[in-house]
Length: 430
Image (tube, rainbow, N blue to C red; front, side, top):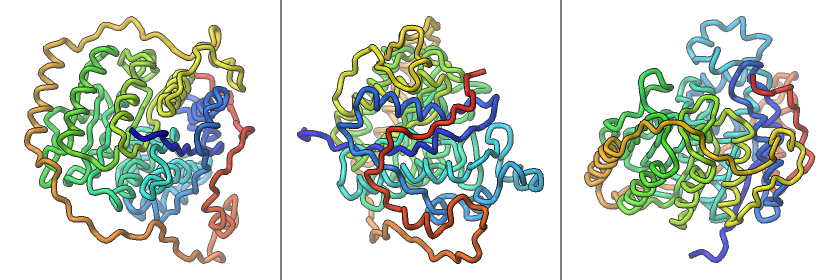
């Protein structure tokens, strides 16, 4: 056992003030609520808090196509009507709207995951947390499912510079399709996604039969579930599969996506997990004592998202949190009882014992096919940072901060503001 985990936590108050639009279920404001709850429990005193750098376009283009990154950089609500063809090509619209400061939002949440990966690579921490990250649906050339830039893929690419095998685990209610697709043909990343699978449920992928191809065959694991799964059945399945995966695959590092839309009562979800049941997955993964990168993801009942990720921050810090929520700026959202734990709902669990047993058997059977600790050729490690020279005269003068000034602030380590500016935009859920 490590004596005491060193934990790096990434947060930028600006990420919580962007607004997807009045009827959109994605509320980045949940990140401010989470952060203030973390502060109110004084968890920040046990971690190193960092404001992430804003990822450069060239960093985003490590995975995404340069034309797509360039388009995200250029588009804004005032000009979007001029780009009907591009909007359709890159899948921007109803699910993935164009809003004020969209690109900066992507730069911040992606920068947090990239920074988290780099700190782990350089052994500056044991666990790195970026609750703003986890946007697992974005594809190489298009937005998808409220996700524009796939920070998880960028973080994993970073980890692959130092680790021959990366394990990705996803407990969001939606299939982690963007991450799976990015690494579908390689054995250097094993993706494991636990999700709702069924007709008409987004994104429609993630059947147990999707297992990867070519060198990646058997390195994609999908655990398709039905409505109403509860703590007991979810945790039993999770522990069985993940312990076998770690034993067979022997990853050097784990990336855990903690989408909170798998909680009971989520606006878009259909599972029946309590916060403790969800957090149990985090506790279990932490026990492997491997370098761990933890992100957020989905979650659309924002007070429960904040509760969940705060409890999970506590789990990562081995800190039991009292159920009575301390006073904080967002206390009104947790009324009437101001409690941290929420019970699970009263949904029927449509996952029968025989269904879960069949899924488990298929997954374990597929795991038998993987080479025990596959041999991977390590390449020469590329540099962490490649920052091109910018032509300042060619910059758009309307940008909120000129590029040069921004560049100078790339390592803003240890910045941390208790009074981050939060704009609520009257974001009470419709």
